[in-house]
Image (tube, rainbow, N blue to C red):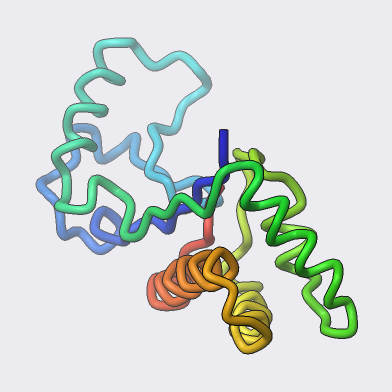
Length: 155
């Protein structure tokens, strides 16, 4: 078990994909994921056709950046390091990223990512620990992709 994160690309939003099979049903959820809008009454055959289109829709398969931030122990190690350096403020890292080594289904809104990036760069400057540096390098890459696309970092 571990913590994975990604930032979606904007290929579909920007129209840089083959035509959507059901453009009247295309919508985007709060994480930027393209979905089929409807009240759960969409036929399975439509979903299967959509899934095939989505897989082949762009070279990113929907995700511009994907990172494994660490296994459950590595994330606990990062969290402990942050807590032991409490003279520095890391609210987003602690409350939205490393609060659990296995959380999923949540995200850091794009509007909060500049603060997350600042916290992550501050963390990078505190140590030469390879575990912390790998974690911070990955979060910086995710944050830069989020800022570039306007999409959240999703876990």
